[in-house]
Structure formats: structure tokens, C-alpha cells
Length: 417
Image 1: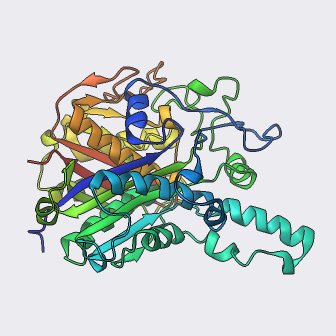
Image 2: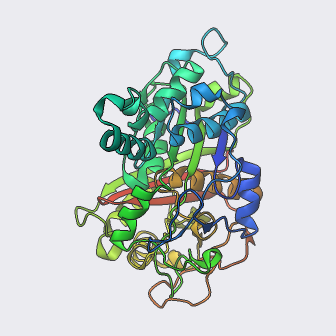
């Protein structure tokens, strides 16, 4: 089983800093922040009034208006990212009848929350106009697995089809589980990642009541400040990241361009608290160690860590402790950054766009910075690549994602050799 190697042959991004990988990466390395005032609704009564909204997304570039009305916004974002990834991988839009064996292509694209926009709209209709006016599409548009379902139908992918749901760990776990599906020979190609679209009143109200989001409303460009002493919460963002994972020999046989190799995956539970990581970062540390074990590498072989780095008090402190626990003394030497200062926190899509950032770091030899890092926190004392990108040639990169409920996910990618 373990002889099957898994590589990445395509990537796609929809985000507040770019609706393709090229623009997304340019924004990351140049520290171009995509956070601004909420425009989707009147946020005047909310504690937080800023977000990382996707800009310039035209769904008609991907489907008809009629078809778009049958998909929640998070699924539309998934289609946008997946189309880019499929194109880069050199895969046909319709797999059935092509040279690709459609039953050997699977989909695993998750979401932390799913069709919340649809749910909010239909609840309003239910209360204002009665049950008979509720849309028959409410359930299929709302459910989280419809990102995978709609992509499967769009491309004719007939292999394993499912969705992971682990809050902000969703996309990371999706990639990791897709990795194992290929390793165990249940598929040759997996379309995987995450999508989210929760910048709506209900989503904002919930997080505001938790006091989890930044209230730096007058200065949105500096609101998300991972690992900084003056951080005051995360900034909600949206979008999608999709990767094409493929078995190595299958990719080579069809002449695909190989972007990176997935070599390790770790998944653990804190068993501690519904929102806080465990003190000391024990659960995340075990996930890092598990991923390194499967990858067969030691800490010194890791060149870059894309940290979860949400800009919340507890996450950044405990994640720092987790990296120290997992890597020992080398934790102070490895290049680390959180790209959420630039992108905000994409919740269920974060792990995918951040794994793509790791792949671009491998490809370009550039480590994206942690922007808005102005005042060091004594409890966050590692090398977070503050404010300016660094040129460092690396061979392996780690993406860490942690989710409410104590879900920890880690994916390790390396340069293909």
C-alpha cells in the first residue's frame, strides 16, 4: 500500500486576495491584505464590521445563472477553484468517455459550515411567508457534501465521493484523507480541498457573540495580526482552495506537470474544549509528529511551516507551544508564517489555500511573510517571517490547521524528486 506515491498536479484558488493561484501568491509574498469593511450587509450593529470578502468573482465564467441558482455560494467558489485546478492538471472537463478512467477519480471537498447563506435566506422565507414557500432546493443547497457532489457531477468523477467536516481543520483533513484514498489504491486521482461562504449576518452574529473576531474595525488592513502581542481575534474570510492529488505513476504516464509530492498527514483530537486548543498544544504536536512519521522525515528536513496562526490569543500561544513540542530546539530555526494576516481566516477552506501556499513556497524558494507583526509576544517567540517575504530554498513544508472541537490536521508536502 505504501509504495504508491501521491503528487499534486493541479491547484486552484478563490480568495479575497485573488481568484487564481497567480494573483493569490503575488498577494501573499507582497503582503497585500484583502481585508476591508463588510459590504454584503449592513454590519453597523455588529461588534466586528470587517471581513475578507471575495472580490470580482463572476459565476457566469463557470456556469449559467440558472445553474448557479441551484448552488450555494460556497459550492460556486468550489467550482471556480476546481476548474482552475483541473485545467492546470491537464484533465478534461468531462471525464466520462475520456482517456481518464472516471471511476478512478474521486472528490473530497469539505466545508466547515456549508450553505449557511441558503439556510439564513430560507429561514427568513419560512417565518415571513410560511412553509409552502420554502425552496425545495433548501436541503441540497445547504448540505456540506454538495461541494463534492456538484464537482463529481460537473466532471463525471465516479470514484470515492465524500466531504470532511472538522471546522477550520476541514480542508487539511480533506487533503489528508484524499491522500490515503490514493495510497490504499481506491483511486488514482482525487479532487480535494475546501470551500466556505459565511460572510452573512447569521455567521457574523455567532462569531461576534463568541467575541472571537477582531474589533479593529477602523483599521481593517492591520486587524489580522498573527502572533503579535496586540492581536484581538481573527477576521472571517471566504473562498475555496482545490488541489488535484494523483498517484505518481498515473501522473507520469499521462505527462502531467508535477508540482509537489504529499508525503505526510497527521490527524489528532485534543479532547479538551469546544473552542480552545489544549494548553501546551499537545494535540497539535502529536499531529505534527504523526505526519512526520508517515513522511519518514526528521524536524531538520522541514524548511517551512504555514501555521494556523489565527490571530487569536489562545491559538497563537498554544500553536507556538505545539511546534516547540514537536520539533524541539529546531523550532527556533525553522521558517514559520501565518498567511492569515493577508487573507483573513477562510475557516473550512483555510487548509487548502494554505497548503497551496506551501507548494508555491517549495516551487519559488520564497517564504510568504506574517504581516502586521509589530510587537513581539513573549509567549510567541519563534521565527514568524515578520512582514517581509524571505528567499529560502526548501525541500519540505508543513501546513497546520486546528478546528473547533479539538480537531488537529497536518499535511506535509515536499519538492518532487
